[in-house]
Image (tube, rainbow, N blue to C red):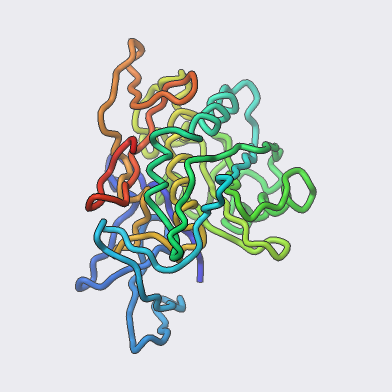
Length: 312
């Protein structure tokens, strides 16, 4: 079974406005496995059944009080917070993205936006902490070429770890950030803008995410054509990274928090930004993290019935 989870679907034109077309077959429930689109969960006497060549494990439990359900899986809820690692894939020479997105990661920790994740807990009641740490970054000079399959994206992460450029960390999210001349063959810019998943690397379950440079397809993956930090691609990637991060900490192994349609917390608020302020440049922003302004999508608050918000 392919364990992909889409963070953001495509936003404009003939492309869908949310995280992907959601199937609603006869009111059946779905589970999070596929790039913003939940796959049908068919319950047959608590056994497993095959749907589209995928084996579906029926998981009971969770609550629907806040329109998102807990399915029993682990969270990234270490008391010390969650770690992040960036892998800059391709050519980022002269691009301000590394500076902007480093500031994003550093600014998220302790922020009102990231605090929304503290409304999520595991079966023991242990909540996610409002703490995230960008520990290390590395680069990859097109080791897998410029058209990446999903397997090759995993190879990028695995290589960074096995060669010692990044540590092997089960309490972390590894982000593969690709330059604008790189695409992903499974549907970057046509089916998705970003996604997250997991893999067994060296005996450890590693959580990682693909986020492409939206300069490659601004009409599909950018909410505006100019960014508050003067780099439309990087500014759009900031929202994608935040989306993938919040989904990974609340559903790292695709069996924790998602709703009856298979949508994770970030998917439920995709392309929703709330109140915004317009800069003289024309760029809009909705929050300040550190010394920078960002336009970051809202996140699903798992409290008071559930709702999208930019702070908690």
